[in-house]
Image (cartoon, rainbow, N blue to C red; front, top):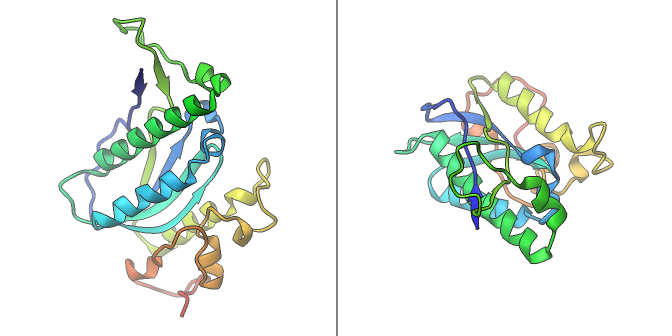
Length: 203
């Protein structure tokens, strides 16, 4: 069985910058929640850190995720790095769904391209074909994205927690209390010139 994935179509080669990145599950299906993929995503964060990058903020939702990452100088582009991340997360999603015998999700994830030469090889889409990535060039931009990320679990339509800081799979608790939640992040101020703002670095 073959697991299909794609990455963003526009190559980005900026390095030593802070990226705001978004992955969305195929058809907005709650595949992250259904497969309890949180542990696998945190392992991926560890891999990114081992490569010299830094996780500055994140939220993992049932059907998508946002992250702020400082992307250090590397032989690979952000596209290649994220494509690899999506590929292995997709494999893990399919493996877990098969183990759960979750055919109702697998059926919705089936995908056959027009030029597909072998109809007997089933393909699946775990994520939408592209990912969103934007460079944050100022602290104001970083704060805008952090606030957006952290409000996701309490937004209308989700209501995953009574407050931003109560949601486990988010960096909100750290930025408001100095205490890490499910995954430890590095404060963005280590990677950008500070100026007066509403979020202070924990002591």
